[in-house]
Length: 362
Ligand code: NAD
Ligand code: ZN
Image 1 (cartoon, rainbow, N blue to C red):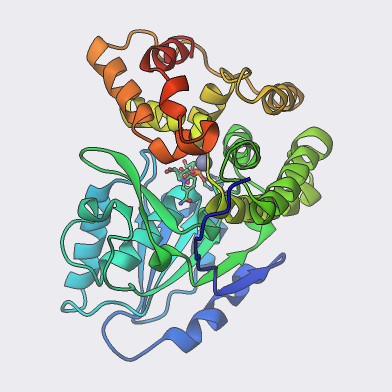
Image 2 (cartoon, protein in one colour; image 1 turned 45 degrees about the vertical axis):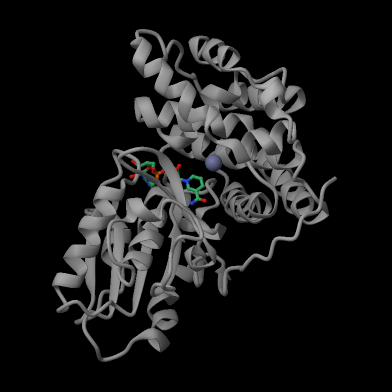
């Protein structure tokens, strides 16, 4: 176990419970000023004609933007939302940005909240500690659970050159509202894939050189809750909604103080080249990693079976040599993940040819 000094910020305010979404207006009240736009709500457009869309507490000087997440968040769209918001208020940043949706919308909200006070394109901030100004108050309200974006110090964006997070203390949400009712109607397969993101965070956090007693504690409980939700309780269980929601949050806390590993590195390669959604890409990659995470993959397969999910096969078939190269380079470039998974001498173990073979088998 290696302890290195890392000093991390946490979520400032946290609320959990059925119906807590209805307290959003109350939670935002102290943040409101009388300058420019007050609160900007970024809401997943899947809720446009749904009751949740109508329950968003939009006041007179607020803005609600419907966000499409058919593709994972891009730096281009972050810049576009930022420009649109600032244009509506003569360049004055809003008081708060609220993201209501899955990991994609929460990441958009975190990024837009940073970019309203940081000039230039979001692409120039992809990396560690590149943001200069704190941004505005960030609120995350998950409607899918698993990514842990509601508890993490990163917002993962696909840029012109790479898929990489804007990672720093300022990215951490200031307020989180966890209402288990909001995830109850998520499509079954999507709920599973995003839930597996959480399970895989726990497996990877626990199986690497950066693990420590703090990250282990969150990962172990997170894994336990995932097992209950996917092996015992089933998708229609109200208890499962609660367990999954907390598992996701704990998973986010765990990987912040440990790290994700081999599966996420491969998954980023898939998403960057094929635009495969993060949860699904993780499932496809993880299913090939039984030699790296034997027990984790065994339990994962029993969850797949129990939930009756059919994982797609042959996703990397038909790739051009250039696309395959880009996939391998993207995965190989995620040094911190390999370092965590295999230690400082990871380059001796992680050969590009091995990655190519793994991708070919997906
Ligand atoms: P998502 O947000 O991309 O949503 C997946 C689909 O589910 C979308 O079509 C969305 O409209 C729909 N959806 C969401 N909630 C719903 C609901 N309640 N009912 C019906 N449909 C609903 O999925 P995700 O897996 O939560 O997020 C993936 C994203 O999160 C990726 O971009 C990934 O890079 C990012 N991520 C971020 C972090 C982080 O720490 N910031 C960690 C892991 C992943
Ligand atoms: Zn993940």
